[in-house]
Image (tube, rainbow over all chains, first blue to last red; front, side, top):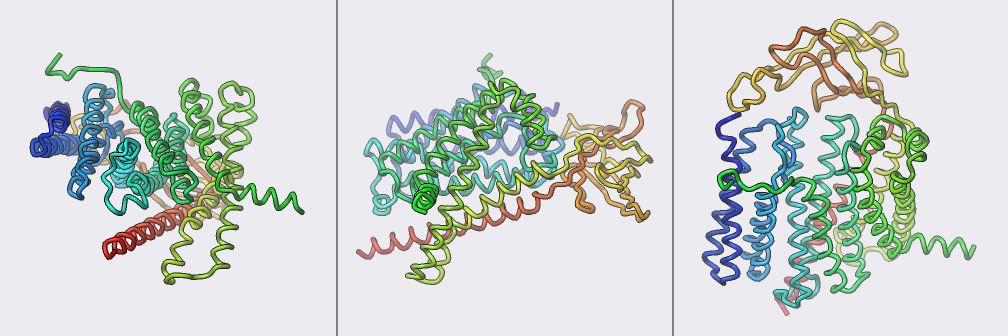
Length: 257
Length: 275
């Protein structure tokens, strides 16, 4: 084993701790502290991801999404804060902390990078898939705020609530990532669709779910409030069918046990 | 005639799309757990044609596979719904003509481009699963040749070259192959020889067939003394070109839709700023 390998976990665990502290700072209304802690958390998270990539390149290890997801969520939180939506940014920080804790405390077994991941398509697919799902999670947080009537009512939100726009972005990115996955699957396994594990069904379920939301959103078939409930209900679907299959049993960090 | 119109109207209804999509989500969620219970029932889908799978596995294990059959039915209904809905909407758009700019009018077709592409993708899948050839394990020993299933073309394994990793960074890979070059000769019935090289993620195409590398030997510097071989997946996939064409069209429609959504959003924001 490369002596740098344990640092992948150490950096991620440090990141998760900073995400947790950033969420605590949000509750204690320490805006600057929350921003600094979120920045530190993101830096540690990115360091862990980069080191893992360095130790796998030109291949890729499976089950990496839970470690990439908090980073994508943190970027979204910083983006929404910069665009004048501090309340939503706070909710996203809390959600990021929860996702990071799940990844840190329920890591999957250690899998070596596999030869068929030695393709640029695989390396583009992973961040795109994560970015799409991060938008769906953010839509859930925005929908919750809408339902609690705490949406930051910027002018443009009145006509089209923010959660809908998050889902549009998420759907576009997620769909493109699936197309990349199909290309990779065809090149590596001779078919764009492989029935080797249940991921195929859960991925299709998520795609159809948000495809259904887009129909409701574009055609205004349901009221905004019902659509918000729909966007919110997407979060447990994502957790159960895309996050949990990539995690393992509970495990304390090695330096604690 | 009246009932045909009623069916046409029902099939084109947007509410039907929503319920079909929700039905698909429900069925796929059930399928997720049922798949986990018996993955071996579904693995043959990777090598059998759809009808053969239904007859051999699906029909005899309905307590587990019902979701897959229901999934196919719902998918069929969704295709019919998408087709009718797209026809109705495109006809209406064409009837009303361009009201705004030409670009706005063109971009308004983007959801229908996606719908058409969705139908192309599913139809291509069906063609692949009904008419294709999928030979999963075709072992060729070094220097020997073997026939491509369903044809008179022979494939000969000429050489196996591996790029052995000698660095320290990827400790698990030291002394093992990082990349490979499998040299094949494809010999036509008239004796013409075409030489091509194969690798993981780098299949070769020849005379309507695609050949993919499934496995090979040796993969390490110090391997047990065995005869070198390549295990090939040989496919004749009549739907794959249209599948990827549909995928590309869908991606264009998706990006066009995003562009339109962003333009409308910006226009609305600037109108509100002026007001």
